[in-house]
Image 1 (spheres, rainbow, N blue to C red):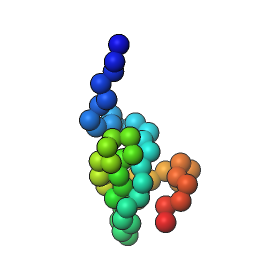
Image 2 (image 1 turned 180 degrees about the vertical axis):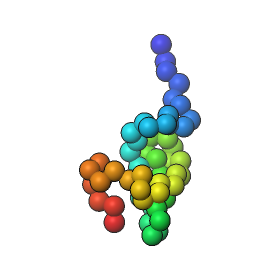
Image 3 (image 1 turned 90 degrees about the vertical axis):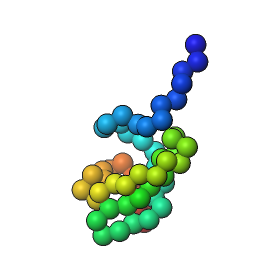
Image 4 (image 1 turned 135 degrees about the horizontal axis):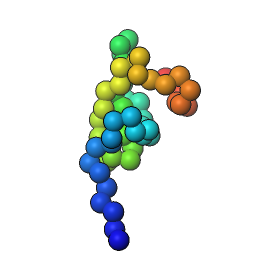
Length: 55
């Protein structure tokens, strides 16, 4: 059986992303597993233990 890839991640799903732009209030990332879909992450939502390098 072939599984169809979801177009968007589920709420609270851990995803891999690449930071593209950083602002004082958050960052824009591309979601690597979702065809480089662009997403905004408020800084208070960024995990302080699950990123390699935010800068």
